[in-house]
Image (tube, rainbow, N blue to C red; front, side):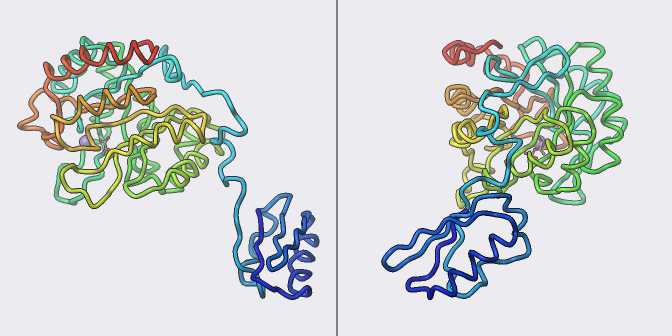
Length: 337
Ligand code: PEP
Ligand code: MN
């Protein structure tokens, strides 16, 4: 961290800051300009927690040099991570496709969808058994019953399964039935839930919060990894902006930015990002082209009657077309489907 003093700060004010730093066992490197003095601080910054340096006389600003996230940081882990789920590897050489309904509605519905997305080339069947809906009156999911259907779908198709979890109870249940858990956008900064997901032992898909910066997102990943679970995959799913033509605004720049800052795999969800079926294919292609490690796409047997997110859900034939149209992009990206 660098501490910038206000112009013409008196020597005793600078001295007060450097003494405090040294008392805590850190080193202060002074650089005195004609008007402004800056102090470079080297050492464990957490020792300064509670000192509120910004409140000391003549301190102008504190400039952090290193990020607060370490375990998810590329600086300390330069090679891209691979996250293994069953016999599938999510990572730099593969293009992982997770597809399925927004919500698990019936056993029959999920099994039909799982069979079809498998035929089209998906590696995972997704489906929400716990649905954190905007309105408390909307369908909230089948809960454990939905998880059981996910396990059935795996048994029948061999696909990996992924489900969103919303609290400790749903994590305990998910551990018994699915291969990977998802933390949804609305819970990205539910720090207790992140810790519990870290302790679950299952790989975690961490969606970006509706209004989260990339650094906040990587700090959220840090909570999971800090519990001893390195198997975290990030998912860009659009952020809130002033634009209303799409449900959210897909921030594709997050893909190269994450690549520069972190070793964690990142996939893109063009379904929740846009809320519009017709925009899924172009953005899926763009996601592959800019280096995403995978895609999450909502597919439904009967989108017109889906209990949630029908308008953004692809039919089976639309999904099949999208997968076929993606192949040349996947090939160009030198990834294996
Ligand atoms: C979902 O994937 O079903 C979902 C609710 O997504 P998000 O958390 O991105 O809104
Ligand atoms: Mn959905």
